[in-house]
Length: 315
Image (cartoon, rainbow, N blue to C red; front, top):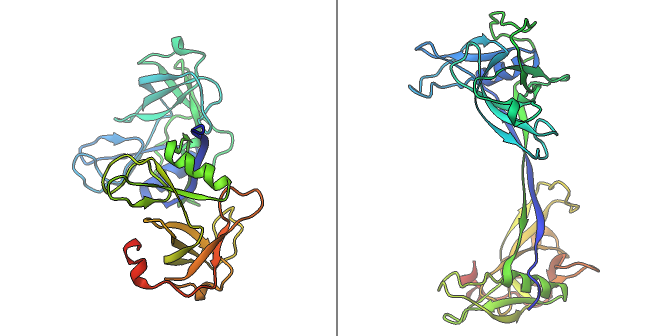
């Protein structure tokens, strides 16, 4: 049996969101070295601010400045900082209740070690040298001995010129993926330009790519069955937006393809034909590029279209 494959995988995309008046004022304030909270009807000051009272659900927008100094309410030591975290040396994650606030703000505390951190520790904001209107404008917190500071609250109104109106956050997930026994066999077969599925011992359907178990019967599968290489387009879509890092000119067609002998359609790109001539029932075959471990795309075989009755169950 071939070795089960493993590989690092990264899923990443930019998430763009607009800001309402409260969040806009908060982030713009950070850019200007001002920390703003929002006051509720019962007099509580929430930092970071929210647009709706978490207790009454009433809309709130009464902005109030709080101090850049505060008290650690709880903490955890981070021995190994990761990519994108506030500091590249070991630090503490802390919840800090800023002076004048009734809730705590989560951020990093730059401390020489866990012995230097405790609940009740007085801290203050260390501002980033370059600020753009983001939570990272607070570079971190640092221990504070109570001496004078130039950042005392000035009862700021929350009104700013050139407000921050939107942010782009890079959402990213790093993990190690293992395809498991069944899909490892499938991938190894592709390296030899073959496509294999697995047959269910109960219903006798052949699933491609194999999953290690029948999705219908729930029983384990192990019998490998070679399918294709030709197949039938069961359904498709026309892609009109060019994907980042994908060197394919739009528009192009992405389709579900039922390979001959398979009882589950897989997906692939259709090439060698104008996008507006792709249709359900089109007979196709894989096109491989040198050194590739999977087909680059599928192209028409020139055969007559498959009858709808032969693939309707695979839509």
